[in-house]
Image (cartoon, rainbow, N blue to C red; front, side):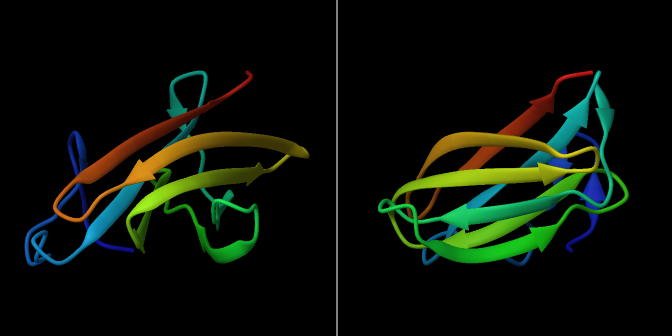
Amino acid sequence: MCGAKSGGLDTAGIDLSTQAVIQGRVLRGGNPVAGAYVRLLDGGGEFTAEVQTSATGHFRFFAADGRWTLRTLAPGGVSVDRAVVAKVGVVAEVDVELEA
């Protein structure tokens, strides 16, 4: 995972002219959830990638342009889906809030 900073993950060193970035945090009651799994599913619902959240609840994917689904699998058997659109040159910031 890249270094976290206040307000989100640092994008220094990422050439946004050639990258579509999807990143964010997993939260429960406003607090970061470490150790959750976030899956990236393509427009047809097919599994593409998976990362585990950092100690600060952050995750990041590099994706192709298009519509994606983030499927978060958190401790306690919680599963949440969030739709997101990726576009080269844009950082799509997505916070996933889990039920407390």
